[in-house]
Image (cartoon, rainbow, N blue to C red; front, side):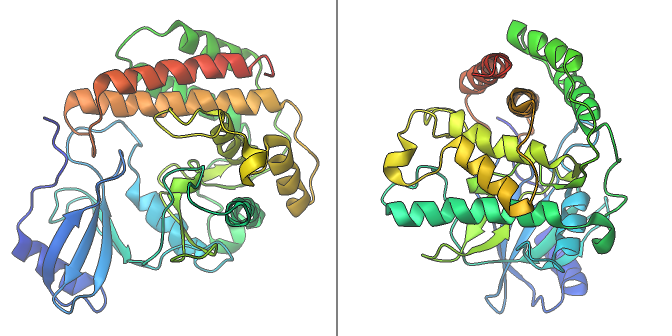
Length: 344
């Protein structure tokens, strides 16, 4: 059984939170949210029945640079000054903490996270507004000038895709648990077909999808963009292609998609319209070499899930899933990446 919860002394943690979290009135209850694979996230209730969210690195041996809760804290603190909705950050611990791992605390927001991108049971108009909010928020994020929010050192400028392909290839090899010829082929293709650096530089979320944002209760107003551990400075088309990748994944995928659904019939935009709206909002030209960006997105997600599979087998995934399901997901994503290189 994988270790999914941190070991801690409730009294020591309570005293720590009282000292460092403004308004915290002593630990009453702490429960782990059931969803999510990477950084364990807890709902914390204090003795005044005020809710907070605590998000921590997982226990166990971790891959280098993974689970960067300090980066999440930094980027959300910076974006609080912009039009990008984020929770209010309250405290970031040191690496040594009462949990035995670094964590941060933020406000709890009573909103809605949609786990099915098809938004079943909702009207076409509701779905259209949700996806319009998604693309508008993404455009707002990419329009933020990193230097104006003190994030100019949040990542390295230039050669983003070259560095990302190398990084995720290395991460994949470090967590490889089975041979995957499609993944090997895709890695070689991406390295041989790297897009030229066109100078575009934005804050990129790295995992921008419907189940990583929160809307108000029964409204289409986005109130928070969550899960920033993969954020950095990079090319905005990486986020855009990652979002569009969900339009291609089937509903049966581990990360549910919309590829086998008649999106027009239920009020969800097609990929071309989504990309066009994004570019119009930002006043930029449509992307060239779109197949590269999409293939890269599938490859990168496959590498991320391979890391989850490795942690599950190593015993420290936040929410272990069946190994066969995870292996199948990595295989399917690698195949989709290879298919995307043909421009399909």
